[in-house]
Length: 148
Image 1 (spheres, rainbow, N blue to C red):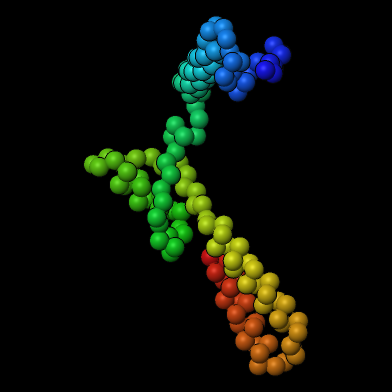
Image 2: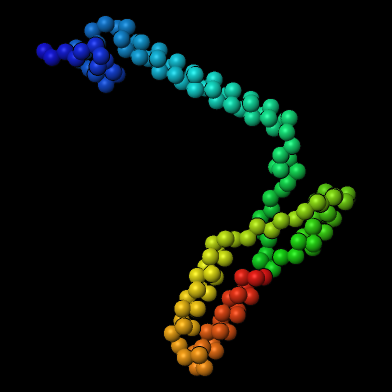
């Protein structure tokens, strides 16, 4: 029979007649349990450290809220601020410091690509043609959407 040297002792090599001593697989089991325990302790230490840092420091998520699902026409930050000041806490006026509107970047990219295609089409047509006038109108409409 072929035996594997002691420097190749891994759990995969403990098949028939390879682990004649019971302490070898037991040692591997203990090592795996020890590594799992060390990972658990490190994770718990990370969680505790995170709680201590959060308790000692003022972070943006301590005083900010994220609201989704606004209609696309809701673009006036003052109106949104006024609404939340009046309605955030029922029966009480709330001080709102700032409203920041996050835009859908993918929608912006699509409009930008469309605008680039229109510029490329405009270069290929005669400047005074009806198609050029139509392309310029479409460019203005797209630019208006981008700037709103």
